[in-house]
Image 1: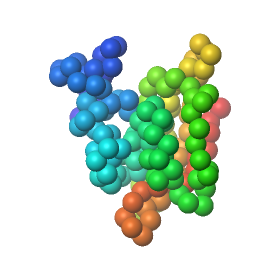
Image 2: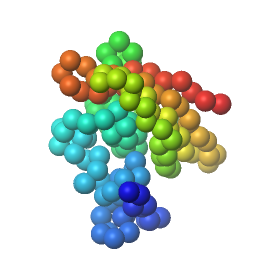
Image 3: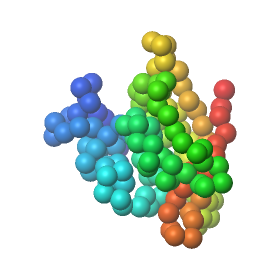
Length: 140
């Protein structure tokens, strides 16, 4: 099933509600359940989409909480944060019950110039049942 595409004014076409930055449904029906209501992402792809949304919204607490302890930074700053423009998930590979990879392209602007971040991210499900971002490989 295709996801509704947000209109240029960042609202969903059919409801007039705020579109989710990840490209999904209205924010309230998409990533808000993870970022604001504390639901656990059921898949690595859902977590990756919610993390993209958290980067757009500068939600450092959510990003750090969903990052594997052994690889996460001590803090996140958004002083020089890019302007995120869109997300495309290219692939989701479930390796086993506790390991998955998500390949994505995120478009952004810095200093008026457009760029692309193309990454294959690795995720793991920890003993508490939560998916967490571990690390990733960047494509040129």
